[in-house]
Length: 148
Image (cartoon, rainbow, N blue to C red; front, side):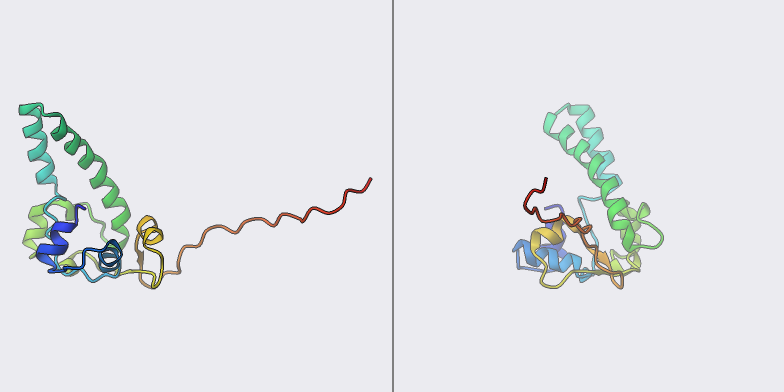
């Protein structure tokens, strides 16, 4: 849901079905990356407010961001050859005009016809790379009549 603000306000998309939303992002169609809720600056601001007010739900938001941002950097970094540590600064994105093409030089590829939940948990893949397949299961010999 943290991308819904961008999807609706900045990308001007109105199809709110999860599959359409995911297809848009995994298909590399994103043009602008404002990502108001993904920034070090917001994390610092929220941490300061949480420290001053000691509001529990705000601490939850801060700790959630502390988990979420590094995971995004690791998993989304595969789409940028220079990595994405700098990308999560709102100031850096603003200086780049919030243009996605300034950060993502390796386009993502959605798998056509793939089930929404499979795509969601596998995530996008870099265009031109083979799809990830689950490991093959070893063959189990069929049980026959016991000899003895």
